Image 1: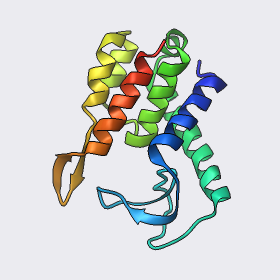
Image 2: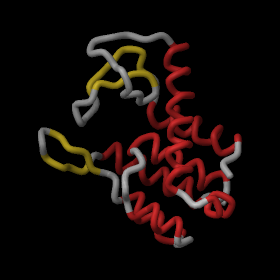
Image 3: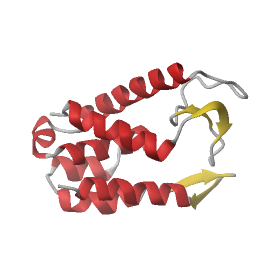
Length: 150
């Protein structure tokens, strides 16, 4: 079960690691972004209000939570603490919930393998080439630290 505390931890983590931009910008992968890392319905060279950024964040957090719950067996969410659930929500918020080994390991209760799986997602496609991104590397390290926090 994902608690409100886990969602609050995730929100603070995302605010810290994403920052907030009220003007749209191209991220390192060339994706138009605004607010707290929002990429949905972003218009090039646009602007949003703080209220819109806060709304997008709440909506994107909810979507990440729903995607995460679709990937995990119910028993898994009860075995995870708030920090672990928050780390996974932040990961899904940033990287999505593709068909990756991380979900298999979680559903098999192989929690010791999760940090190395999180660290695999520190690359982005830039100019058609997959490259390690320092910002993603640092974010994954922070997610691993949150995952490991008791």
